[in-house]
Figure 1 (tube, rainbow, N blue to C red):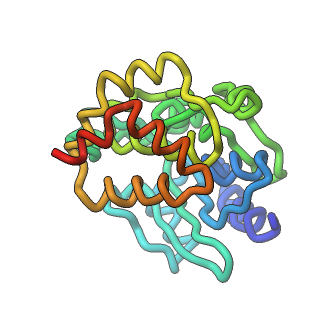
Figure 2: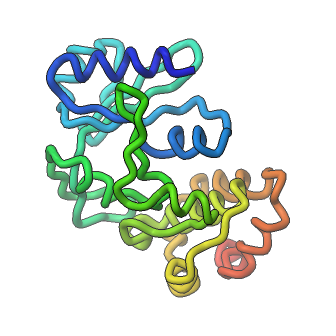
Figure 3: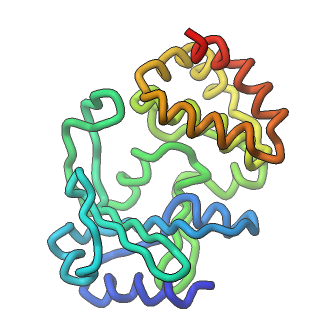
Length: 217
């Protein structure tokens, strides 16, 4: 399961950079769930990464690249800070060397766990505790990216987690922001929620946060 991932991490770290698997793959590994999408964060810049992975496709923010292997899709991104969002896109990006600062721009604590080249897990923002208590807790402000409002509901549905009390209030107050999303983005998230085996809970959450009425307008 991890041999290819180890190899890719070591290709980066052997060049003197830091590199970690981050996000959903690590979360799903701890939950014993299959995942074919692997996100890697690193202090290597795009120019460094393209030398290591010439097959990679650089993303539109010039903040990383992606490529596919037989079994997995890899997205490798540089540690960064993001500010001044316009809808879902940050206008200001600052590349940094501090992985913890990079984690603090992410959506939920359960997506901040790191897996290093030696397959050791690092937990700086208490993601493991929230996995154990089955809690969706905000890291960066969800209102900076309205898609995170729907992602919170989707993750709660698919994982059968509860939404933290502070985030619950924020979702109630700001669900209208999904009007800033494209119809395709909204439909994609709603489809994932309602096609889940746990769809009844998902439907309950969509009603709770008035998403049903919002998307009817």
